[in-house]
Image (cartoon, rainbow, N blue to C red; front, side, top):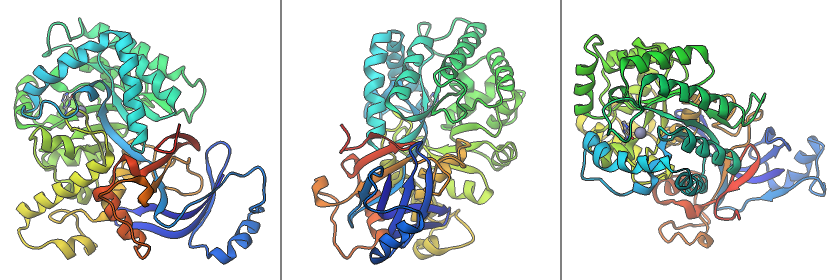
Length: 468
Ligand code: GUN
Ligand code: ZN
């Protein structure tokens, strides 16, 4: 297909491409073949001819966008929990450890029932896709069969995904805990084989398994040792877990692993901190932990919706970026109340404003927007918010060469956004004279799934308001 119209794509953490007239060619296997930016409408035929194409070509689907619409890379949700969607918006009066015990584990336990898993996961993946999330790092439950269902459904609906069977052999309830470390590891091994067989011998498979120790508190040393060995035997399989989310959690972790002086060292000790590790939250990480995480090349998933909702704290994302840590954005349902990456961007902005208020105390507005040297102590600039929701997430997933921006050679994981009146989002006004930059800012502040019109993964249309 060939798409013609406004395009927005990240260029760097500080810079963004805002092209009012781009031409983008996507091959039948979903790869961006070539892109031309700032094409004058009067020279459209000429530019197409340069690539051996014309508007009359019968084998080409020609998509023309209006002013008020644009294409941009799909969102990369670097951390969320599929079996918790039913709880979105509930339980916000608790903090993490009680919330897990009273709100979260009872809901996750229901996924022992495969029929329940089938019903719920279909809704969940559908909702995530329709919000423009083209790549998602999913936690399942500890159930092998139920989590296979989650992998099947992401595969069928066409979402790019890392899917993890959760490991936990202690500190939950007797009915929601694995019987032994051996069983947990055996199930994880068969889960990896199952997911890898969904797209046999395809190195660009959309759905892949991810090793998922829930967090250090839920796992005995024996289990973490076994998972470290499993990870070593499967270097290509990524790892996801939680880190340093809540103060009570950190204190408890330190009592369980007195041989490690920091939380990050626990994962490192068991061989679980490496380039393809995704660490969610990191609200209270110390500088030495950021340095260790950086040395290992692991990525951080900033989950502001959840961090505010469970009163976990405000992550110092500017400091992470200055320190050179990889950083993406996550929705963390149902710690967060919504799977919307748009909401996550809004709250990442608010979080950075809160942090800047307490760490600087004066007006960071202009400096924050234009400073070239530092992120910490300033609110995150709009290009940076956009970056962590797309390209930063791709880096965290080690998929930076495949997705995250709309550059030739990458796969076409993209969203068609519209803020035209026909979207019926009454909170998002549109003027012909608006610049693309101002449209993007207001979409990020007031947009929702009504503005997500079409969603493609690897060139296949998989969601959005106009999809059915
Ligand atoms: N830490 C351990 N499990 C969880 C979870 O399900 N959600 C969040 N936000 N933190 C966790
Ligand atoms: Zn989580």
